[in-house]
Length: 411
Image (cartoon, rainbow, N blue to C red; front, side, top):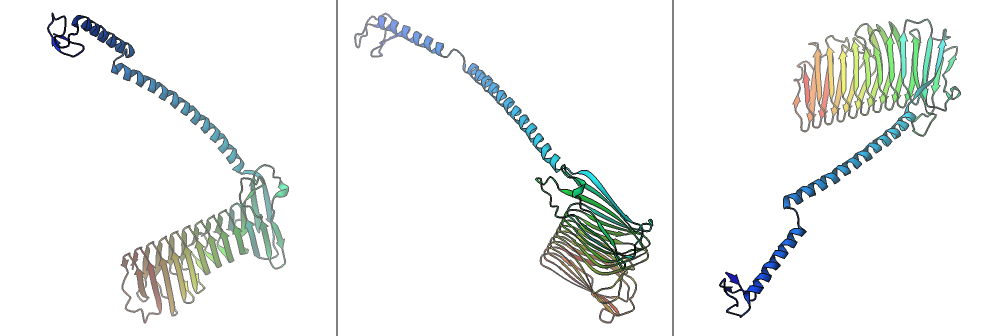
């Protein structure tokens, strides 16, 4: 069948004219077929590939551009890392403290057995050792660390004055707060060895360093121990000492921890203990059979934990323990298995905000004890009051308080 290209009417194959409109069919059909073929040919010329071929080509072009971009990004990253490494090396090279000198002092004999040690150290540690293993009364070794452009004439020095009635040792490093821009910053690591014959009065102020006192002798006498540091730790040890006397203990650290440990052997004589830190831990071990002369002991911290060991403390008068922390916890291990031959009231006031309180105690049968505890959202487990609390010669009273923590006391 043929179609009229003018009116679209079907016409027989042998028709020459459209019987509807009279248009000649052969010429128009030939022209229409030729025109259609030309249009199809033109269309195929304009789109020479299939859709799959088109997608493959687009993917290859995109992948190539992506690889190029990633290569450029990797090169930029490597260059950045190299630059940053060079910068960090330069910064930490300026930060590094090198040993630039040493100082040594010693005193063979002294006119007095009392030594007053007054030290301010801006940057650096302080180690003090009490020992029997020396014939020299005082020996001081200082390692000086710093940067370039510093010479020994700028070092702070110890001053030793041996008076008739006392021996004084003084040191002041000056303000040594660290700064990247201060090329003359100095750090002093100080080691002091003291003969056990000396009676020590120590007043030490520090900014960033640790303080360490090792009482390593048979007998030691310290009449004043005032140690204050901002970011360092404070450690006092007397493990091998048979007889140690430490009066007026004042230990302060802002962010460091405080440790105080006495020997279980011999006799320890302690008075007026105060220790506080903000974010550090407090650990106190009063040893065994220590004698306490005073009416108060205070251990406080803000966010750190407090750990206490106290075994057969011999009190000379009524004593109040003040133990407190905000977000830390308190653990106390108390043993009292003998009676003090005088009427005494020993009171523990332990306060915690969000932490827990745990008391492990062992008392002689004739000692009276009373536990009282309060908490907001935590749980409480405490023993009942001893029946002889009101009539006992020695009484132990525990007031335990926490907001959201747990309270547990076990006898």
